[in-house]
Image (cartoon, rainbow, N blue to C red; front, side, top):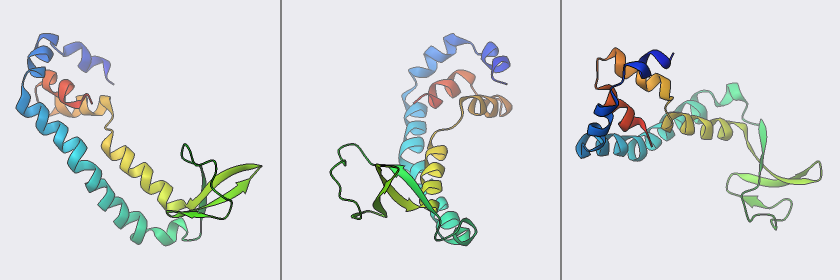
Length: 136
């Protein structure tokens, strides 16, 4: 899917596009200052309210503790999670919809390279600028 589009990119345009400050900075601002909060709002609406009962309000997920949190006591509450002991390992038990919530935000701020290039190609956009603007 990506190969035909990558073959058509003129890499001299990529170098020129990297020097265009305005479009690159606009794209970076949109990707890192606007999209995470937009995905937060969309995810909160759909996963936190609309589909919360479909997921199961009582469904729980076990995730690893954050670095440096090994001294948290079992049963202590941190944020939306509770520290539990599962299989001899301390884990944080959080509502399942919150795990989906985090995944939606990450997917929203990290566009697929192939699809960005395909959409840019279909829109007859500048392939070099599309490649430079996408790259984090």
